[in-house]
Image (cartoon, rainbow, N blue to C red; front, side, top):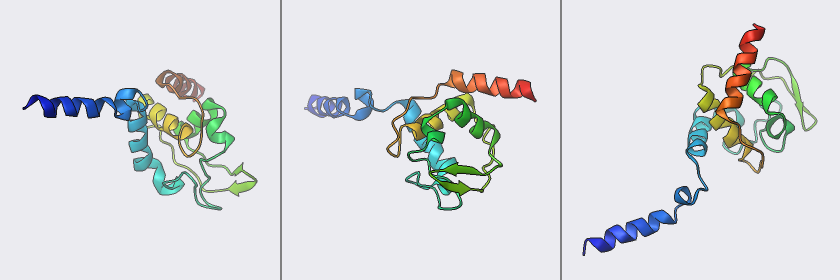
Length: 137
């Protein structure tokens, strides 16, 4: 009789997205980091706040050049940017205190969420850019 619940549990677990490879530890970690550090400004849907915080949806800042995106997270942003013909002046703090893995996870989450369909950011890419930025200073 005990074998049925265990078998049923294993069967249910085998159909979960995590077991099917649709969810990675990085995407789970990325979602948690987004909610912890990014959501208050960029909102739950990544839509931002008009005339204040830029959206993370359908913008080349997110889906385009990884180096630019990683640099923004590492250094922050203290200059106006134009996204979808709207100017945003609100500065963004640096998140350089996060680990390379955390930055890769949250950026991968953002690049694959909110309707974005872009490539992942690797820990190695973040590490390389962090070193390049450190050598400039």
